[in-house]
Image 1: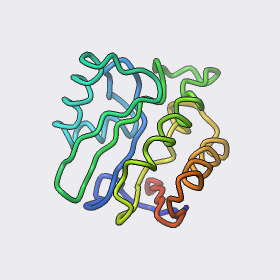
Image 2: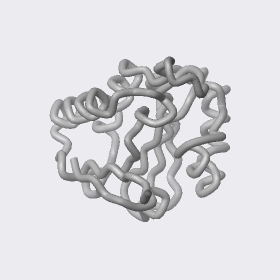
Image 3: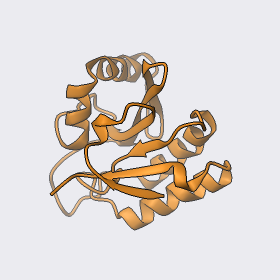
Image 4: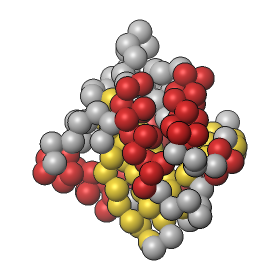
Length: 152
């Protein structure tokens, strides 16, 4: 797993993965930036939620270009700002990444924020271990997992 400082939304090739809720809202955090940068991917996520009755651990996939896939992973049922509530579901992350590492183009990196550890109130150490476990289970190269941290 490699860490980068910078803007995840500037990735041009591979797969961008971000966590979102099952309510159709992308109004804060990384999801808000994702929605602004990739409005068609947001529209597909909303359609997928309704059409397929998506639930925790499901993924809405949109191909922005032939070289860039966008994965909106349903990592939390609801959203909120209560610091005492863990909104992210570790089981959802496990389910999603178990599928994701089977589907992605292995030629390119999988780029993501520290999914679930911001507004989802999850522990990044626990979440990253789930992600790495699934990568190993599906022989996905660990060095092709790129985690973006915002400049502060």
